[in-house]
Length: 474
Image 1 (cartoon, rainbow, N blue to C red):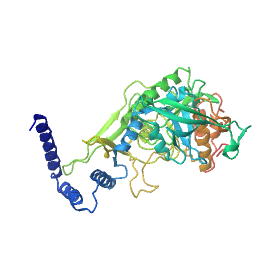
Image 2 (image 1 turned 120 degrees about the horizontal axis):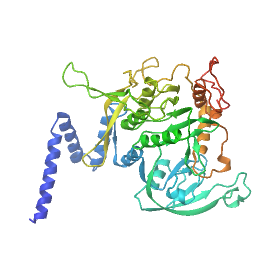
Image 3 (image 1 turned 180 degrees about the vertical axis):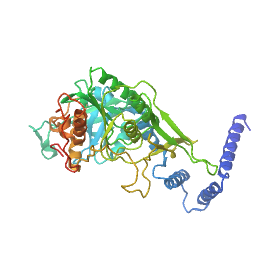
Image 4 (image 1 turned 90 degrees about the horizontal axis):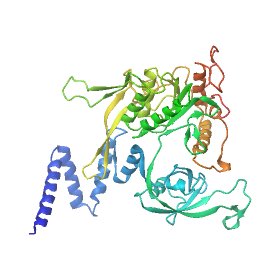
């Protein structure tokens, strides 16, 4: 036997032996292996063993808790792109047009291939490499736009017509005439933002100071990824350079969380000392022993020290975002405004499998706020049970669904980089369109006069109906 073949055979034998020994390590493992063997040898049709394994592991982890999961190979890249804040792509943020079911550009990413090609907010993507996009799920469209850095992709772009339209295209039922063009893009490494300001400036960069309230900055944190603390530190420095900031509003509404380490680093930015979070690991094996609790503390060197801070939260503020909200509230650094948060107080570790195909997202610890109060909402918990993070007294406000819908549409246009079609522009100042932000600004102005806001010091605050908050869109 040739030496190369012998080495290959030996490697295969060792791999099989290791798999067999691992399968024999527990009674459950032996039973699982027996089931797979019986299916492989006795089932009527030839079964896909990989699909069987994926389905079995997925089902098993779902029995542990609602947050543990098996991440399959095709989902792994999506998760890593969110947490790492980078991926190979063309730099487009997309939505789906409800009428045509085609992808619409919400905004190009600044200095991306799409940005440099002149693709603008409101442009419609009709084909990708010749394949029509109408009716294709958004996730599949995003997947087709991503790929290896250096690879090319061809898009057919339709620019929106003027509003009101001056020319009709008889070939498509009298629809407004649009300009179509093919654009060839070369994929690059796209870095995604997790920290956003009040609005885009002429160069596409974020303006941090709130329009109409020049003394107060708005910082919106959309997720907690690898670069979030770095982005937020840069934003804090830019805000400090404005001269004399009178307040800062950190918006965590809709933030689903992310990396525990990122949440800790963000808290550390704004604290000179104090507890950030307690984490409690797996219960000790020995009877009578408690699980080990690890305490994370802030280091000296806070940014924007002494600047009043408000934090906006809602029912979709979860996980790492709740850590930040609870920390800034318990340490007295910020006042919380909005509604009770989601109540996810467990930490999931991302554990790769040996075949490098899938990942286990496994609950490995839970966290407690600095006061050691519980955050996690367990099965069976009601509204009167302790969970989540609640706004400070007098700052509870829950906008109506209609108000939230209008805010989403307004914010989408405001966040777009580059030109926005006239028919998609939405005017108005943030404090007039966002009742939760308006409540936070009232809280800041009650502490001292703020440019653009009435001085509320010494006035008795009127009661507010949370179902009908102040503002024209409430």
